[in-house]
Amino acid sequence: MLSCSKKAEEKKTIFTPPKLVDKNWEFETNPVWADEFDYTGLPNATKWDYDTGGSGWGNNELQNYTNRLDNASVADGKLTITAKIENLGGRQYTSARVVSRGKGDFLYGRFEIKAKLPSGKGTWPAIWMLPTDRAYGDWPKSGEIDIMEHVGYDPNVIHFSTHTEAYYFKINTQKTATKRIATATTDFHVYRVDWTPYAIRGFIDGVKYFEFVNEGKGYTVWPFDKPFHLLLNVAVGGDWGGAQGVDNSTFPNAMEVDYVRVYKMIEKP
Image (cartoon, rainbow, N blue to C red; front, side):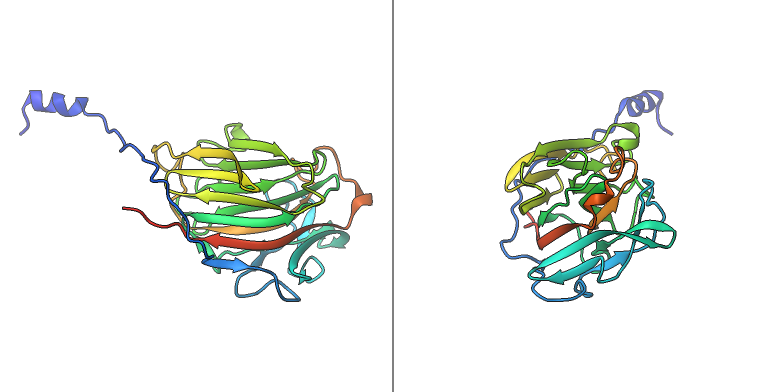
């Protein structure tokens, strides 16, 4: 049996998480996974799948996502995701949400996507990442990494965000940053995330503008220690994208993707 003094001493002991250290991880120079879109037709089925349907996707979005060539096609060295005015499944618009889930799942790494964004009011393109297995529970508990978001009514303003149980947009605590890119809708730019055990860092054309450092407080703050997959989509309307309405005169509207490249993080002791 423990003595009273020993018990008192144990009660005073407070767990202190180990101090996290940035090991300045580097990344391999050749991609471990990539799509250069140097073919014609639907996106490569060995690398991409689709989320389909018109459920509103938790944001009251207006589109019905399909797996058709009309909405996701590869030609001339690029992937084009097209949102159209089209009645399908009770929705007024169609589009595509292309995902690497089950075909490209990654824990840490450098992710580069070169893309040109749509410009119409009501468009809401995104390049982002979700957890493949949702080990910590449903959204936002298992996390989300938004490498690029853009809403058409606020042209050329790019958003990078992370969402977790402690930090997410519905309680207005999300970790986020914005950067104005004057030619985001007319030229291609490289959107990038460097994801390591220490931090998530966001870049545009090699310039860092976002950093979220692991606070070492467990999954409610940092669920980013499990595999995630990539998503590329163009939503229409929704709570954010449609906050100022939808300009139908700008449709069809498309996001063009020149390439997607994933570089493995080099482990350090």
